[in-house]
Image 1 (cartoon, rainbow, N blue to C red):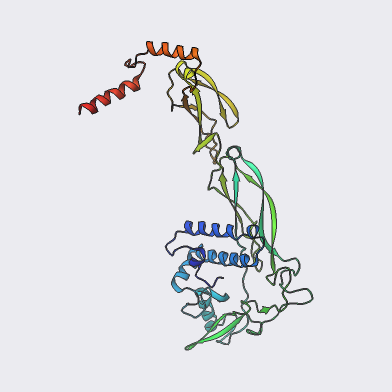
Image 2: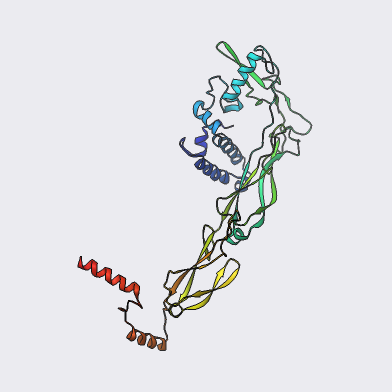
Length: 378
């Protein structure tokens, strides 16, 4: 566990929300990930410190305990979060054991209390997908790194031909005693971190950790209808537990990439389609893109630029399967930027016949002119 203030390690304030803390952690974990640093030892140690800090702050109870007592400030002298010593709860259990004889007796320190099973760490992975993949679902093959038991030393941490030795500080009990006034408090041994063993010749492959980082590749089914921010949980694909504890889980965060044609609005998709001036005036049937190909769309005569036309039932599916969204087509009337001589003559003839004051032909213009007169009159 980290010796430094976990808030300082993650670069957040004590008032930060759990979501702010999670975002800060993800940013740092991405920065110091072995895939980014090329296995740099200093970066690996930094990542361990980051993981340890997040382990404290993501857990409401651990965070509250740290906010109250900090590192090594437990009222029972248990060492808080630092140096492998137990926190408040662990210290209280040690005092309880000392008086009531659990795992030892009468304040004599007794035998070593065995660590119980501990679940492995959860892992997080971001998966970018296209809008079309989000619309229909897809099976994605993802590759990520996780810690596994070292195959060289079978998890002992000791080099070949050697083995862990009995800790000289606690004589193999995993616990030491410290006098606190009238009390003699039992705490986890700081040298061996409660294991009762030390390693003089560490394994060259895992550097005595007993675990190494390996690359793992799995196929994940991403359901239709997912959106950015959706989290999928893959049980048992996190890091291994300790002392028979279960594996952690893999949490996959979906990131739907921006599409060149469509903008997603909930279950609907929006597409802007340019239409020529004559088609907008006279009306026409045009071909528009959809998630599955193309479809016919009838543009009524007199359609204005910015008008929204709807194609029902061909948008995004609801993640829970309740409904299918629509495709919204925003019409953009395009005025030609270049005219032939004949086209110009026709437009000039049209302009001679044109009457902008005709409220039936130009309702928007007439309403605007009426408002303008009121404004000028006022």
